[in-house]
Length: 120
Image 1: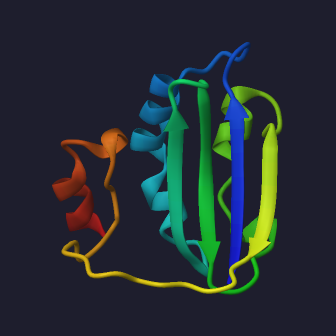
Image 2 (image 1 turned 90 degrees about the horizontal axis):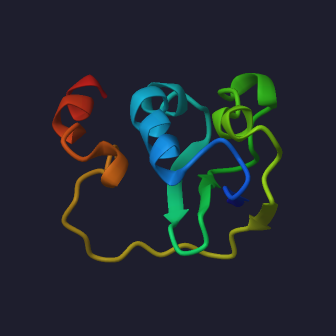
């Protein structure tokens, strides 16, 4: 398994955490649910440091770029991420959990989860 992590410091860019969250809510789910090999994508925000980014967990290798959605954050922010790293996952563990799916969770999707879940 492979892990990709990337984030931007938003200071000095035209974007805010709120604008990135809005874009995520309105434009992202359908694109990424169809990517082959993507096990999980987690978007994150750090308000204290004004950072926005994502972590992707791949079952194997990341597919070629032409099989992935365009990098919307790159286009919106206007420059490559400040940090981009790739790791080999050395192991995975799933704990006890109650949620059947992680699809459309988080502040970006508050109030939309049930309607998004119906489409998936």
